[in-house]
Image 1 (cartoon, helix red, strand yellow):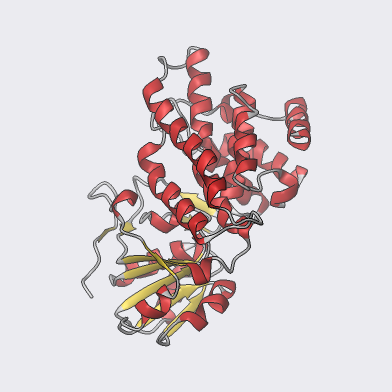
Image 2 (cartoon, one colour; image 1 turned 90 degrees about the vertical axis):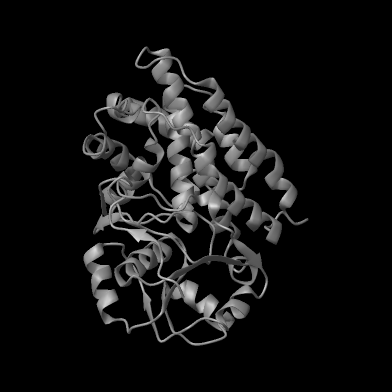
Length: 358
């Protein structure tokens, strides 16, 4: 197999855009494709490997279950694995991101096989730097690797609970937070008027998702193979159709990271960024009822009680986010409302009431 295209610094070159990947979809895909693989290692998690192992046509020369993305931890895993001509990442965001780092260190091709379609990790080559539960730097500093293949096997993905897959749309619709902040910043004189053409392009994408996703569901409202492909397509199109402006902070993902770091706990990515976006829209006063309605239509668990985040855990995250963002913001960026007007005290209680009643 050819040596993959990669770089240890994103300022040198850029990874392949998500829209350029020719994703393979189908039933029996893993069995067909794996019959032609050279010797390979698997990076995965126990639950994902338990579902996938029966679909593999050949056995790997080695495998590793990961539970962290800390680079020192992954260095040890890479050191302990045998040599191989290929790495295969099987799982959710953690397993796939870990496989990127280890394949990058070895300089060998990588095949990505999601067991759930819950985040954009499936089609992004960047390798975020983690120190325990703390993410360091930005995608401008991180290394990256282009994948040899992305395989979406319905036999694997449809075995997962529906909520883990519909969460992938949460990782797309959370872009509503950037629109809310941009409009708020413009209305309060913190930046020039918004680029309405860019905003409308993103909203058109969101409205398309909300209108078309229910049509992919089975009669019992469960997800179908059409639903999985629809979610993947929405994730793949997200980057080119998202709002990108220094006056439009993407604080929904920062709040997710802050919540996980301060609570030393992991949550379902797409659900927590959706919750974070709903919080930002509420705090900005920019159509706060719109996003919750969209999330419900797309079967995304986003309310605290359904995501597994407690009142005190959310409160800790919102108290911590100003400090967290102070180490992330560029001098050219407009600060997020979560920093300039923190959600604490009475404001937090009002937010919690909104979330409980919504």
